[in-house]
Image (cartoon, rainbow, N blue to C red; front, side, top):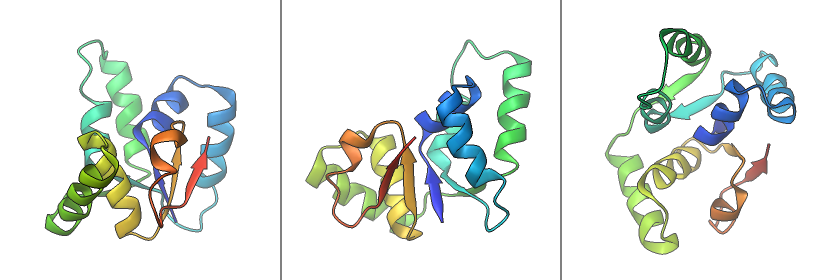
Length: 124
């Protein structure tokens, strides 16, 4: 299973060819639904510059993903990651979600995540 980092989805929506190719391989594999942390949904929909068309495109993509809510277990894993690796809160939640679901994290930002013990990370 895989967890998409927010930045991977942003570049996918911007139609960057290498990211589109990598994420489409997962999205259309039909083996399982890719996962995102609920904080990713928040981040994607937070920009004041979004148009109604942008929101519709994001909503269509979100409908094809499994969104894992932030619960106490993930929050505690994320808190530990923030303490140990000095991650930003959203990054710690995304990483904690990947660890909690035993998934590989697909990201454009491998630098911050590759240090985390036990977290498989794949660059897109």
